[in-house]
Amino acid sequence: MARLRKLICLVAFASTAILCSATERILFLRVAPSQARLFISNADGSGERALTPSGSLDYNPAWSPKGDWIVFTSERGGSADLYRIHPDGTGLDRLTDDPAYDDQGAFSPDGKQVAFVTTRAAGTANLWMLDVVTRQARPLTSGHGGDFRPAWSPDGKWIAFSSDRESSFPAARGRWERLHLVDIYLIRPDGTGLKRISEHGNFCGSPKWTPDSKSVIAYCMSAEETYTYRSGNEDGATKLIQIDAATGETKLVEGGPGVKISSSVLASGEIAYVRNDKSSHGVFYGSGKPGPAGSDVNSPSWSPDGTTLVYSRYTRQFNPEPSKVWSRNANYELSTTTFLPASDSTRERFAVTKADYEAETMSLFVVEEGKPARSILERKDMILGPQWSPDGGQIIFGIGGFPLFDTIGHGPAQVGIVNTDGSEFHLVTSGPNSNAFPSFAPDGKHIVYRTTGPEGGGLRITELDHHSISVLTKEYDNFPVWSPRGDLIAFIRKMGDDFEVFTIRPDGKDVNQLTRTKGNDAHLGWSPDGERIVFTSSRMGFKDEALVTGGAPQPYGEIFVMRYDGTQVEQLTDNQWEDGGPAWSSHKTNPPGVTTQSK
Image 1: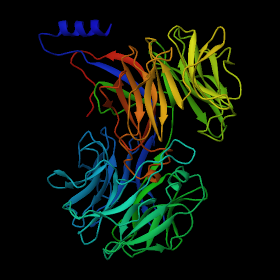
Image 2: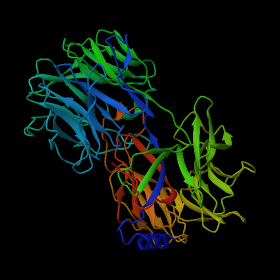
Image 3: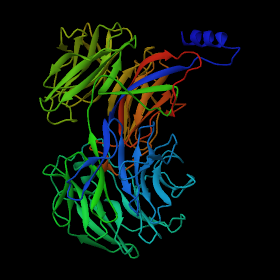
Image 4: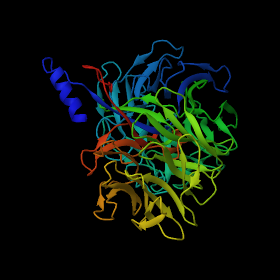
């Protein structure tokens, strides 16, 4: 059919050399704000007013040294770009217009340049410099690691920043999410003099200069705490450290209790920060006085005189109904939904799950094109990884206890199945093992799923009519998905500290490793023709400090597509958020001469 469609397009429009544009549609979950809006208030939080309108993602504001401009990041035009605006809300001006990720702008002391984070070079986060007048940009740092949160010294001689460039990405204890090992570096504005001034091995981030340009203040914690405190729901304490720029000598700064992030130094020398823990959320000062309150307050920046601050408030809302987002590849249309979506064979319906944390329940939804989501099953259990039967009459999934959320689910997990009208729900597996993430074979008679527990781990194949079980693998394997052609099963295998994509034939032969990257490759989905695999990957690394991206459990991960043999890898998303659980949705052909614009 695809070849016929292409041939028709070629014949019909050969005279004008315009081809029909086939656009693939991918669904996935993005753990990110559904809206981020800039606000300005007095230092104590009074007099708050909106600086930017609702309906977009505006974040990471920073004041200019003269107080006449605020630079910030916005996704209103597609990918993340830098904008500036006057504090009274006038003069909105776009500073960058590039399909790469541009973020975390910081003005030079004379206001003529902006240091910022971008993926323009090699896809990972590096620092670049932007001339505000000419709009010309040049690289400042390079390397495969991530560089974040640039800050100019008041005398203009140095730029401090945080970086994981010398770090690995070890897994959090007992988890698959990665810790974030980050150090403080200095570099001159001309790119010379790069040096690390913090002790390597844990985390110190968001450096801010003292008024005399001799030292920086940073918030610091152990590597393990970069996961513990990520959600903002755990009580604890982080440190504020002053680091001498010349000698690297450190001393503890008194800052008050709690998990302190996004520290700042005001012109008066007073320390300010965001407190983000179970007991309290919002802006606080070293004196103990509070500022703007709320768990939605992010990345505050103070006016030069310290009397006013600008910040972003995040709003989060996850809906099963798809919402279109920007794609860096015009051949792929991207839409977000909730947990681990899966389309049926017609690609006109998809199944997805959503948690209600207050009720401690989870629901399985069916979503049809242009219609509201329809709940067909609600349980006091985790429901994850739905997949359709080939005839579209049933949905199979994992249900029960999972290590992802402690408040929902009773273990061990089992494979469940239900008709698409919500009837005849029952369990397919039983026993002491945790069984989940099932996928139908094209014949509709067999399923593959992952198992772990006292009876061994790996992948299993079950014949549904006779309940026979065969062992496919015995390794630490997960997320199996059966190819629509039936010849291959793609899955994830743990290799040391990393997770890689593999394929295997249903008879257990021809195990083939498709990816070899540091970190996590996971969450697989097949294209309708079985030619390509969509997956999420952490290979591009962090693009910001883990604790300041708004509570994502692993705030990195981009959506990629590759051929079934691991070749022709293409990146589809480029942002600081967590993108995961991708699935192929529909395949559509645009009208002649019309394509989906990537930017």
